[in-house]
Amino acid sequence: MSLEILAAPAPRAIVDDPGLGPDARSLRAQASDYLALTKPRIVLLVVLTTAAGFWLGARASGRPEDWLWTLLGTALVAAGASAWNHALEWRRDARMRRTARRPVPQGRIGAVQALVFGSVLALVGVILLAAVRPLAAGVAGLTFLLYVAVYTPLKPVTTLNTAIGAVPGALPPVIGWSAATGSLGMEAWSLFLIVFLWQFPHFLSIAWVHRQDYARGGHRMLPLIDPEGRRTGQQSAVYALILVPGALLPAVVGLAGPVYFAGALVLSLYYLAMAWRFWWDVRDQTARALMRASFIYLPAVFLLLVLNPLPA
Image 1 (cartoon, rainbow, N blue to C red):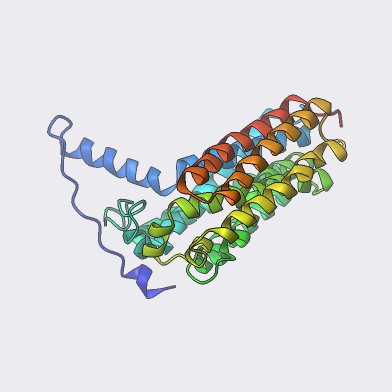
Image 2: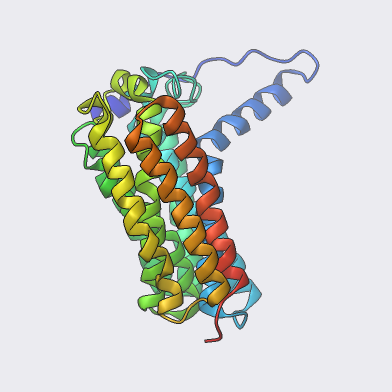
């Protein structure tokens, strides 16, 4: 384990709210900090894509309790991975404006505490998933390891970290599918492909908008070695282009129907247009427009999948 992690600052005293009393204020503040370690917005996206994967795999025939334990288990594994990320990156977080106020760099939670918290969450999550399907627990465990042991350490080393991180980022719907079916068929990998390809325009647009902040944090992102943004815009457009046929694959393999096919095609062409615009005119404004399109695209595509599945 890195000595930097063990040398994380000790938690600081929290100013009490006179209206709540010291104990109540302290407990509420600590709970808020531990919740922040889990990155709730990321966990929510993970849960939504996992739910879609399970729903599509079960085709309404799965047991409700299995669905519940799958979502809870996956959420805990994702939350645990996020807590590990906070602990591993606290020094870099402290140098970035976007992350400097996180609990660990601020000293409100120690890095070792974050590691223990994350480990407990992930372990409980894997156990819950194993009770549903061992295969789902295995995929979730692999997702955790790829995120904390491969992707996170490579962020300050290589610009390929985006591609590497896209793999664990795309596995949640596979966890859901494997929990429902106990298998990893072509249908599961078609869901994986959509999320995998979607991430490139999404994260490259974020990296461009926040390039100076990433530079302060020591993260090796593509815009830092591409100051004019040509390669950043080009890669965004190329991956968005590949996503057009990739998003149609669920319909091709018999997972989704014609409504999904038409909707996914329109959404993918829209996403491509935003990525192409960013490539043609690399600016913060076009990057932000692409970022907003990415927030619309993925939930809309998965909603269409859930609304228009084909019978098993």
